[in-house]
Length: 393
Length: 193
Image (tube, rainbow over all chains, first blue to last red; front, side):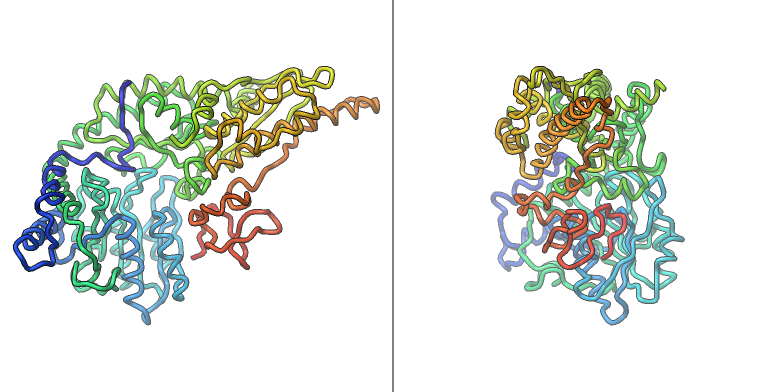
């Protein structure tokens, strides 16, 4: 059976070149970067080279890049570390209502330390306006965090404008750029952000590789105490192989970024154009223009996401959904609900996120097998029957 | 795969999908907010369930559960059909993931709602009145949005988004809520951090 992987937002395959550079650090070059001997120093050097590559990718200085173990950790580090370092100045945080759970829950944890947070709404495309951020900032606000791109609906936020509002109000600004870095050009200086999260498994690096950019001179509380690693901000023996893989993935992203876009954009546009021709009642989600290049997100009316995913999987296609049944908490995606999409429609959400290896044949195959799946599930759906009956009247 | 072979088999080849136009009883439970909604139609002959059809909006488990319930009910007397429980359905399916157990609840509930509708029509008929379909007002099953109301799911508590880890049942809606606090609905658009 044909295998078509369209779940970039969950994980990308490790680029073969990145894997090659990692292997020696899982084998013969096993030294601890903090050791003084040559085995350790070899690892240390690899670590710093990776830091340079990541810094180059986002136009930062090497000393501004701190390695972590995941995008979620970077987000926790940023929200907690930046807010707590300013204790005494204020106790209020501003977030968008479609942030990743690692941002929302970090803010929730800070509740125990006397902080509170305001959620800025989004429009129907999932966009935050700088004006709404300005309105949410109070004299107690110490941090604003708005994501650069949303993985569920693909929307890219006007982060540069939001950062400008924050600086005008003398408030620190962090952006969760996990879904964006390595997939679209990101320049921390141009964006004017004080902190930025990124993760390697979103751009052909290994899982467990991630980083937080913290602008020079910005105070942040250490996230793991107890060692001198990562400038004393994040103790613990470094995962050298993962970090090396992240560095290589960053280099490849800079080298191949344009090529990747040229390949993936026509395929994405073909999907967006063709889906509504073949399936009725498709509602695309997210911003139509300001969106990730590899990302197609939509809701299919009258049926539920997990049932679609299982059927797609049986045809060899891997995708993802924000339906309640696919989440372990059995709740519909907070992102779709925040965008004003009703519960029933949100249950039918689906994301096809293309990877580097996606081919035109893959897309044609998907377009061929998808409509019968929808038809079959709709035949089973009481909501569709109701709709047809009402239409008849 | 998160589901047993039997669940997947029923999901791929669901039995008795459809609508019975002149059904003797109709039952509908759940709502799209929860992610699951089931409509059951029954035909009754000599106190036995002669035919069952269903329609389901929902996940793989919900579809498999509906199919299994329909299969278990056909041929049974009304009394025996009422003895079909969520547990027996889940057992017949070779088990369900913990957080999907509420789906099996819905399957038996929908069948029982259809039977209740049939019985009420019978009563009305005996009284000489023409029974109106009482199934128009579906029995709502509200608790499925939050898995904690279903006792055995405590292992998943870390996943509740609006409540903290210590939970209790809200006496009003039955949903899990943060202990001693007003439970905000899990929509997450308004997280009161």
